[in-house]
Length: 168
Image (cartoon, rainbow, N blue to C red; front, side, top):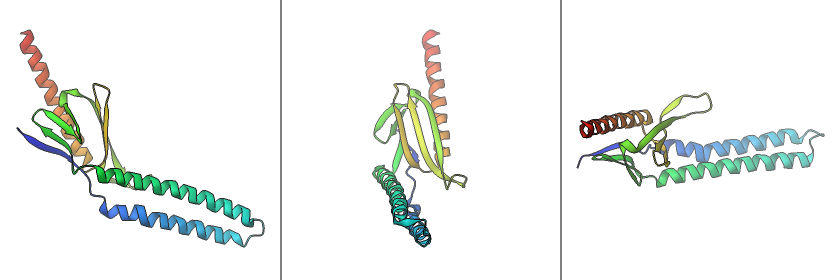
């Protein structure tokens, strides 16, 4: 049986330290410095400073929980995300045929809102039975998308040829 690995998990070891450790530390420092700078103002008061600090720490906590959840999800993902075995595809644990794919979408990771794009990203596979399979942190996501589109086109031509033979 022919086996081809279509998608691998991206390596986020370098960026994980920056996102999980340094970015929250930077935000905490900015919050503390801004509260200290306003503390000398007579109109500021301790109540406003505490409220401001509490709100900033809640936002920071949500951000940290989101980062931990994303990296935990990425760590559980196998190194070989999408594998083709013969005419079947395996997306993490789900098996299906290429002809069962209704649509494929991808989104590349980017640095900041207007920053540059990385080659890794997220891919979503929509199946005819209504399931949506998605995985975050796919290496070379554009190439994976192109390869899956090629497999869909090849499977659709083979299915149409089989129908013509049956009708002919």
